[in-house]
Length: 319
Image (cartoon, rainbow, N blue to C red; front, side, top):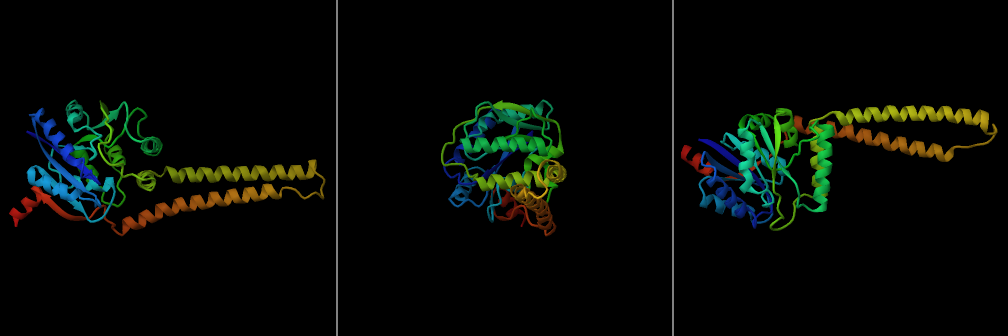
């Protein structure tokens, strides 16, 4: 029998996590051809999420709980979970109950039909306006910077074959971006339609700052297009400046009296604009160099504080 590994990054999910686990157990009753395991990764949540995970591990021997030493972010939490799965297929979903675990069978059927990765696609999303805006920007960024096909919808609810996950685990540097890792591993990716539900409790852990960090991870770790855009912008600005200079000379000689001083405001506007563009481009180059420096210093994707449940028990038996 094939095994499905469910990986769930957890943050402020004390109230919702038991329901998500119960849904997975219910879904697996209708998938008799598969066994399963659940890997719950606590991303250093400030509430009692890990105590809830510990309790769930005690109730079900198929659950492994991992607690990270600090908040590394959703994608690092997923990478931590990937390093502890043993299944032939891996299903990733959220801890808030909005991604219905009862419909995991749809993703698995997509894999059975030949796809390497299957993403859930929502006809009607129940996120807040802020999250929907963030998703739209992320969609645009992945299409432009990472070469995602226009008709492919990506989400946090997806299933992947084991070889894809193993290829993703080869990425050992800081700032992992799961979507970028998937897109560089395979092009055999499809969508299936699933329902999207209202959040059962609490609110999203994504703030504007976290979304910005996520976008930076995406296009600085897996694309050089921003640097090419910076080069193109510099060329355009230089050509505009040259053309404006020619225009100023012609205007001075043929249109305005020779002794008339003109163009101070225009000159200051050009200086401020060019200065801003130079600072932006230098900052972009610095961002790339800074991330290279951090990666060269082997900054970890995640640090595990504690493991509970099935895997912890296996380690104890080995001792």
